[in-house]
Amino acid sequence: MSDDSQHEEEILGKAYDARLMRRLMSYVRPYRLMTAAAVALILVSSALQLVGPLATAVALDLFVRPPQARAASLSGASRLVRDALLARGVDPSQVQAQGLAVVAVVFIAAVVLTFVTVYAEGYVMMLMGQYIMYDLRNQIFGHLQRLPIAFFDRNPIGRLVTRVTTDVDALNEMFTSGLVELLGDVLLLAGIVVVLFWLDWRLALTAFSIVPLLVLLTGWFRGGVRQAFREVRVRVAAINAFLQEHVTGMAVVQLFGREARAYGEFVEINDRHRVANVRSIFYYAIYFPGIELITALGTGLLIWVGGGQVLAGAVSLGALIAFLQYAQRFYQPLSDLSEKYNILQGAMASSERIFRLLDAPVSIESPPAAFVPERMLGAIEFDQVHFSYLPGEAVIKGISFRVRPGETLAVVGHTGAGKSTLANLLLRFYDVDSGAVRVDGVDVREWSLPVLRRGIGMVLQDVFLFAGTVAENIRLGDAGIADDRLRWAAAEVHALPFIERLPAGMQAVVRERGAGLSVGQKQLIAFARALAFDPRILILDEATSSIDTETEQLIQQALERLLRGRTSVVIAHRLSTIQRADRILVMHKGEVREIGTHQELLAQRGIYHRLYLLQYREQELERHAREGREQQPAARYP
Image (cartoon, rainbow, N blue to C red; front, top):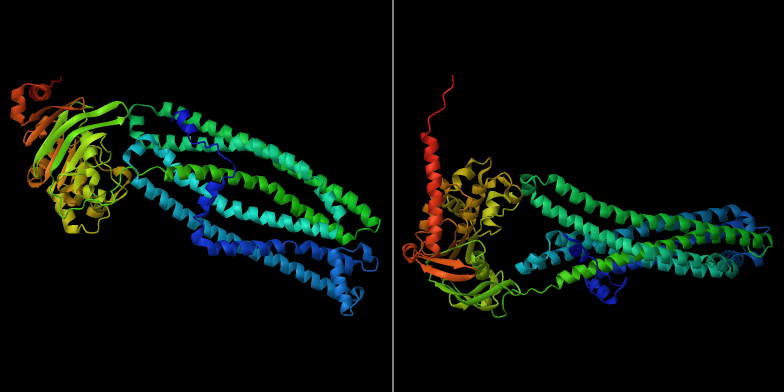
């Protein structure tokens, strides 16, 4: 992938986009009860985390050193507890042991309940996050299946895989640990601010005096790590795209000895990823120790100022200890906010890329009142069809022809003549620029797409097999195709003998892309697949070019019987395989130059005649060379 295409991964949007967030929240609505439960648990856990320091202050002020504690120096919490005890006629100095026991129980209970609520909150949010990601991945994959083939021509597969994996994971991180923990941090910070000012406003101002330093450090970190983070995402997408392309084409890499070159290219891409990560690590390495240094400075200020006030009798020792504990709990969420900011920023970038994919228009789909016939007859018509994959580069130029139901039309021509494009237009993988492609007299744009494609079988030169079993690759999930029909289809194309020789027959495992099967065997399975679905129109696109001569003869015998009653379009390079076609259409540079039977075209002595002579001469040379090798006397050795 080029650098330009890599940088298409980078979305330079805002760290927070209300429009995107509203759209993301639509995925939360089905789980609003889980969300409400998580928010309630956050409120409870935030309140419980405030209990511990207050309990410590009460224990120190009232029960550890009650004789020296003057009323004016007591913390607010200690005064409340003292007043409550005095109202009941209890002197705190007389119940020190009992008071310490009660405070200890309250402290431990608060810690245990905090653990329980935080665990429950994390479990609920993780569960909700998994449900949301499940829904989102299903939506993305479902949308990908509906997009036109032209979309996949423009977008590398590795980039699309990144959408479903890395980008969705970024959203999962936001839902499970970003927004929720951000809300919890904000609530905890608000609670601590209120409590600190309630305890002592002077010490509160001392504790908050280092906040400007934290803000400055956080701003520097946020600005620096933002670009590094985005660059990491770009490099990850580049690695995914490179791996997908080269692992898929590993046979070509090894065939042409490109291992060293491919390895060098991967090392370069991987090094860019490493450098981007190292750059982000630099900011983290400065930021977190800086936070520790500043918070240590704040703690030192509290000890200095607060200790002096304790000695002066203006503040109780319990209040000072509580301040120190609250300060630690206050500084930690502040440092975490930057991490939450990065999570939110990454999620915004990922959501924009995901929604850009989901918003990609499904330009080829069934019309509202789609044509659904009771039975497809199989008539085909191309009427003044013009088509180009790229604007200004015409591939099909005003082609017109008709194929009657049950007729076999062969299409020949040089590479790039537009032969396979005819099949793509007939299946409506692409829409014509002008003109019309009709099946049974109805424009394919008016057909129901599933019905149209269900009635057309196609066998390509490059057969694609899915990981699974042989039966699953022939049936393709259609439960209506019985086992007997699978065996019949395999037998008709002479695939059954080799299938039965496999260890488990029809249930033999097929590895990814048919690894372990020969090219000819994969072709035979593809023939069986097409015939099992009993299409009214059968398209063979160079389907026998990868099969040996003996197997091809067997398939030709089967096809002669099976194509009767079916409309068939045979796109072929070997002219010997199409001589019995009802008509042969000769294409050249996107135009129909000749059409007729084999003998008629030979008599015209045009393009078809030249192609035939060229292939005949090659076959004769091969035959003479083979006969010469057979007649050559064996070498004699002394």
